[in-house]
Amino acid sequence: MLKVEALNFSYSRGGHRTHAVKSVDLTVRRGEVLGIVGESGCGKSSLARCLVGLVQPESGSIALNAQELGRRWRREQHRAVQMVFQDPRSSLNPRMTVFQQINEGWKTHPEIKPPDARRAAADLLARVGLLPEHLDRRPEALSGGQAQRVSIARALAVSPQLLICDEAVSALDVSVQTQVLSLLAEIRRELNLAIIFISHDLGVVRQISDRVAVMYFGEIVETGETETVFERPSHDYTRQLLSAALDLADEPVAARGR
Ligand SMILES: Nc1ncnc2c1ncn2[C@@H]1O[C@H](COP(=O)(O)OP(=O)(O)OP(=O)(O)O)[C@@H](O)[C@H]1O
Ligand SMILES: [Mg+2]
Image (tube, rainbow, N blue to C red; front, side):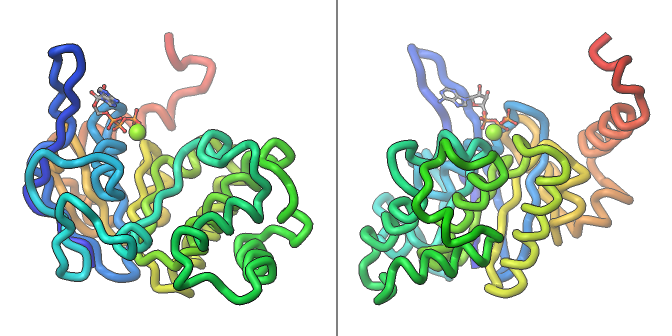
């Protein structure tokens, strides 16, 4: 469904250039969850921004359903790829109610606006485990987990084919993380939605992903079935990443950072 080839992206700032995404190739099949892991600063979010059309890659190609996305994406192509960010509070509009935020997507894409928008929005909230009464709340009156559910509902409102979750559960505490992860797994099954799941948390990625791509300094150094990558990593960097995660898990919390 998604095919990315030789993608390059750089930031240029004050004469300084950061090559954040280097010749990245990847594919995502319909209904598949692809995990992307790698240490902080390796380019995961930059790649996500390219895939959702927020920034313009320098070179390479992104094709959705065998249609190349050029410089200007069509409206329905934007609709097909939705993103859920790490911090729901900063990605939601603080001045708008939950209903208004969901309805925004239908204003942009009137061809899919349901006849009874309020009712459809309430159905979406039910799908993500929220109540109709949440429709008239503003983000400040939601917990972090509830706000992230709203972000997911808002993304689903426009019937995407691919959902990109960039550290979407990282800011949530562990029990809420588990709930949101099972919600994503359920949505993916029911809607046959493809998900790119970006996280620095290897345990979470292992839990949800069918395949995993390992990113290192802007490049994808290894891709494979999740269990193969975790059990028999083929790249040195993947081994390092896995053993670092294990060390951290073994170490008593009080000893960390010493
Ligand atoms: N807006 C920006 N302007 C300039 N450089 C940037 C910008 N955003 C990111 N970078 C740089 O691009 C590189 C990749 O950053 P990116 O945010 O994609 O990493 P990441 O893998 O998402 O990290 P994290 O796990 O911390 O979120 C880093 O070197 C970073 O400093
Ligand atoms: Mg990031």
